[in-house]
Image (cartoon, rainbow over all chains, first blue to last red; front, side, top):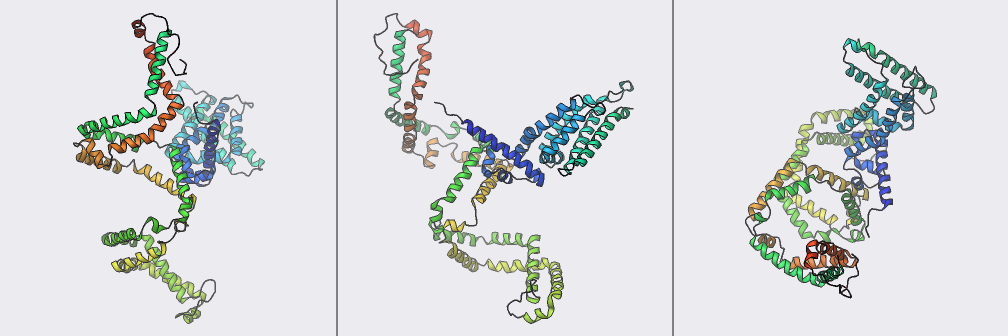
Amino acid sequence: MVLRQKPEKVEERERIRLSLLRATVMLAARHGFAGLGLREVARGADIAPTSFYRHFADMEELGLALIDELIGPLLARWNELANAPSPDPRSPLYALIDQALQSTRDEPELMRFVLAERVGAVPTCRIALHKKLDQLAEALRPQLPPSRPARGKREDSTLDAVASAAVTLLLQGCADSLELVDDDMEGRARVRRQLDLQLRRLLSTRSDADE
Amino acid sequence: MNEHVRALYEAHVAHELAESRAHTFETRVDTLASEVFDWLDDIRLDELITPAQVMGVIERFVIAMRISGGITELAGQMSQTVFRSPVTTETRLDELLPYENYRDYADKVESLQGAQREVLRLITETRAFRALLTRALASSAVLLLAPREDGEQGRAGPFTNARRKLGRELGEKLEERLSRYFEQRALSLARRAAQQAEMLLEPETLRAIADELWDAIGSMRLSALFSFLTVSDLEDFVVLSYETWLTFRKTAFFHETSVQVVDAFFAKYGSESVQALLEDMGVTESMVVDELRILFAPVLALAERTGLRERQIRQRLLRFYESEGLQALLPLQPAPSSSSSSSSGEL
């Protein structure tokens, strides 16, 4: 007879791991990730602080797991939509904008984490977040209109800069929508319009920047 | 494998199993321990292992190894078990630390006068201490001279009348002025406080404080002594200690001191026989034999009962009995009518 870890134990372990990640998101929204201690997070997840190490070696490892396991899937969905055909030809990023604002509404704390930690005090988390956001910028590149290579401009760096600016604008739109109360539909529509307009302007002026 | 070889194989397995039974294990341990200890008497420590190898072990297992989360969790749970144990509730401090031991510690602390003064100097020179001192002095002076903030009259004292005459408004102004006055003189006040505190460090005063402290806590039960601690605080201390250890083990200080300790250890024992080292550590042949018997005889018995031993023996012998070399050596003859093996295991 071979005894291995029981499936229910594995399941319980996964559940606690997720609780730790969720507790971190909630607490980081209030105090910032760098100010969080593992004891506080463990208590937030309703486990003994000494049990924290069963799941993560330290807070840095937890932060990286959070970015990978919670923020990763969220941004992956954004990446898909960045390339999806738009129902409105005048607004190429229609679906992406909608999804970004919806994500912000569904998971405001997670969005606060993204917004705060991309300029946060924990370098490893900052770098990991930037990598994820760079992937979004990369996914946005096909949406950018072709440049005029005949003029011999620096095509790649310009595209990168515009795609990166588009991501920054998108995140700023999410930050603006975080300030709205739940039933402020008018405010949401305003943020959406503003974001759409800004992104359209940015995408259309890329060629001008090349000149 | 033909029938004849199979019969031989089964007989061999049965023989090996009989050899490995617990009663033969004890005799084998005796023989092995005797041989090993004789051998260790002829072997120098630096022949067996080098300082670099020991440092390698320290680096891999003490400095770099990631400690399993199960261990920290267990440490937390075990400390809680001790904390909540009825023994902790019932045991008195002086049962664990008799007065004689406490007195020896107190004597030692009392003799470390240089250290006491240094600690005192470090404390009184901090800004936090100065701030605390000036605040305490200003508050005390105001309490003496001005009415209380809640309007309640204090008990009659030397300044009761003056306090009444001053009134609340004047009291607030006075507090402000006094605070400023004390703040400007914080440095000299702190020095004076340090001088006063040094008087406390006189051996007689210290001894009196230590004795009084013992009278207060010596007969206390551990649960009462640590009543300010909760299980949650205890967990925090385990985590804090663990985190401190994780940081400390990565420091250059820990690495350097480890190297020096290992070198010093080898300077003392490197050219000695391993047997001499074991003797110094209090490890004897009979102790090793006894512990091996106590620990391993039941484990081997369990391994045999659950079939692990038999499976191992079968796997080891099978390679030999299935080898072409053996088949070639054996004459072709009919297989025996019945197996001589007592084993019921299948191939």
